Length: 429
Image (cartoon, rainbow, N blue to C red; front, side, top):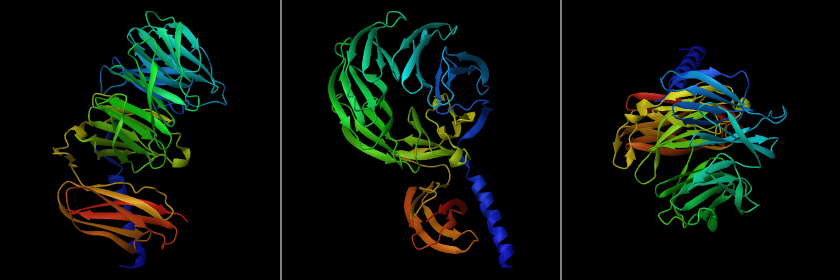
């Protein structure tokens, strides 16, 4: 076989393998293009209705007949952001009783929080103040801005009674209440407040963290915080003692994560162009069980800031298209003790990619078997063997130092258990 025919055959093989690796256990079942790009939409599901919050509007979809997604109404908020400001117009939507509390951003400073009836979408009131979140607890409404304003929640009219001062050096974005403790997500840590007197929260602690935080999830005895630095990290704290979090473990993603959410023991994360599903075991370890490559050029990717889960479907918005994926196959993956066993061989996308000198490669095996990882250049020449031997079931992580190689496109090939998978990686110097 001459060199040209070999090169064409190799590239055809690469193209076929890469296509097969575009998704695993996640199936795209619905999508709709948007005529107006809404960067950083807020997404949530409430009472069989899907809400997409964008620039001065909230689009709703009926989910009562899933997998059918039926467009319902578009709620136009009674303000119009200027055309030069096009980020995060709807920060959050909270439902309390018969009302939806909507935090909306206007020109990055003045915030208009509108309260509407979710049934009839009738505007009730605007609360003019900088705010990012709402929570209701023991007949009190908390509005998170630079500080936390406390209101009576007996009716829809917001009348401030007390202000809980937070540090002006931190940018607060989310509140969670567990028992009589409030956790407030700031950009550099978690502020902890006591609610024994619900009308007057008091500061009882602060959990400093490394890096800027973009998300916080509290569940049972665990506090999870997501660091948005590259690569992103999910840090887990034990909060059996509500006001004294104790470091438990952390998980480093193979990508920069923009959005993350949790449903039961499944985690959903969206990176630069990849939607991923992880299963959490009984000791807070995460294992990859599914993914979907969104195939969006990184230079045009606006970023997904929120995900929503309902039944066995996950929803997201990539700035151009609203998407729904079915993750039912993930629910059938067996679990062996504290270790997640993948249903098939997995070869993760190397990270970082593109990379300068060193990149990390992860692969997972459903059974213990011989495995081999090789690197090839763009014309099919063998460059290096990274791993070759008998490997146990589960995940293996490798590091490839390519400082001695020239810039260009390379291919990582995994051969294991009579299967072959491949990923493309780009070296830049």
